[in-house]
Image 1 (cartoon, helix red, strand yellow):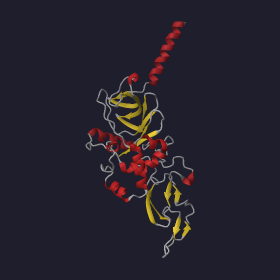
Image 2 (tube, one colour):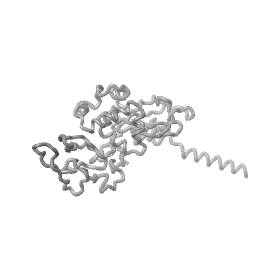
Image 3 (cartoon, one colour):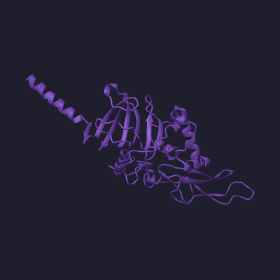
Amino acid sequence: MKLVQIVMLLILLSQTSCKEAKNQYVNGRKDGDWIEYLNADWSEEVPKESCVYYRIVSYKNGFPVGLVKDYYKSGSPQSEEYLISGPYLENGIRPKDKSHGLTKRFDEKSNLISEWMYYDEKGESDIKILISTGYKEIELDKRFNKEYFLNYSKTTKLLNDLFIKYNAGDEELINRMNKSAGDENLTDDDSVNNNIDENNNYSNQANENLQLNSQNRCSYCSGSGKCKSCSKIFRVHYWNSNSHWTDRNETRPGQLMCDVCHGAGVLYGNVPINGGNPLEKKCYVSNCINGWIYCRECNYDGRGNNIGYCNKCKGSGFSN
C-alpha cells in the first residue's frame, strides 16, 4: 500500500513539474512565457542560486512581446520596460537589450520609481518626450514619490528642473528640443548623456524585431499606450497678473485644453491704456473647468478608469 502511495506521489509531482515548466524553444527560438535568471550586467543567463536579477518575459518567435518585468534576486521590482531586441536563440549569444517607450527603474529597498527614460522605435533615448510628456505619465504610477525621486540623484533632480522649464515655455529649451531630441549639449551631466545610444546602426535582427512588434502594436494608439487625445502638448495662453501675456506648453492626462479660453478659464478683454489687468469674464463653455475639459477618450465626465492611457490596449501599447 505504501509503495502504491509513493508511486502515485511521484507521478503527481512529475505532472506538476511539467505543468509549471515555462521556458521553451520553438524552432531554436524562445517562445511563450519565460523566467530568466541573469548575471549583474544582464549579458548571461545563470543558475537561479547565482543570479543577481531575474526577468519575467513572454516571447514570440524569439522576440519579447508585451511588458517585461525585471526583479532583484530578493523579489523586489527592478524595472519595467518594452524590449525590441532579439531574436533570442537557443545556445546563441544573448542580444543586448534595447527598450522602446517608457522604462521605469526601482530602488531595491523602497520599491519606489527612482529613474525613468523614454526610448524611440530604434531604442535611442528620446529626451524631448522624457521631459515633456514623460514626467506626466510617470506621475500616474502610484509607486512614484516625487520627494524621494528628487533626492535620489543629481541626474533625477536635473530632469525635474528641465521638465519645469520646458512646460513653463522656456523658449531656448523648447527650440533645442525641437532641433534635436538627443542634443548632447543639452546638459553637462554625463549620466544623462551616456544613456543616449551612440550606435545608430541596427542589425537585421533589430529590424525584424521592430517588424514583429509593429504587428502586435496597438493600432489605435500606434503603440504608445497613451490616450491619443489628451497626451498631446497644448499651448496654454493666459495673462500673467500685472505683467504680460504668457504662453506655456502643458499636458494633462485625462483633460483637453478648452479651445475657447485656451486653458485660461476666462475670456479676456483689452488691456487698459493706462496699464493694469484686462477685463475678464468666465469662459462660457459649459464643461470647461478652469480652462480644461474632461477627455472623452479616457476620462468622460471625470469617471475614467484608465486616465491618460489608451482605452483599447489599457496602456500596454500592444494589441491583445
